[in-house]
Image (cartoon, rainbow, N blue to C red; front, side, top):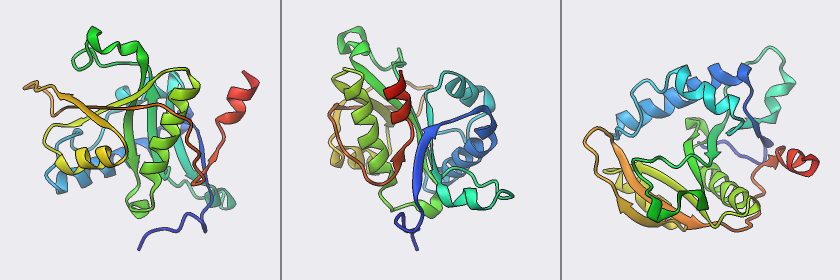
Length: 200
């Protein structure tokens, strides 16, 4: 049974240092779920703090919260979802011919298992697409596991074009995708980052 987002109001915000344990838990759960399905996209057990702390410090990691959790101050619920969006083109994947500076790049997109199937991954990708558009960049890009055909098909259904697959023996990822940035409205959550853009 999937959680109803209408009954649980959601809000998107930037991650703060105190969010680290919850983010690590969410990513570890997602990695374990991937492993249970034979997908080796992420390290088993998730990522170490050294991979996540820089994203928090650079202010490029975003969290989706169930706002009802704030009604219980003793509850330390992990985020509902996480996504990092930055301008860091992986040099092993994106070449100068790709014009790496023409895009924002999605990393660490994960939705907590109780919220799976609720459309939050779609909504976060649409938000990231709008984020790239607002930044004046023509593309939103990402990479995923070379052998995860279901995820690749999902990205195609979400409007991404397969650019190419880079087959590096030391990396499971390498299927590269991009889609044009554009202004897309999402009603799945409140975007608390908009206030930052307005006040900047």
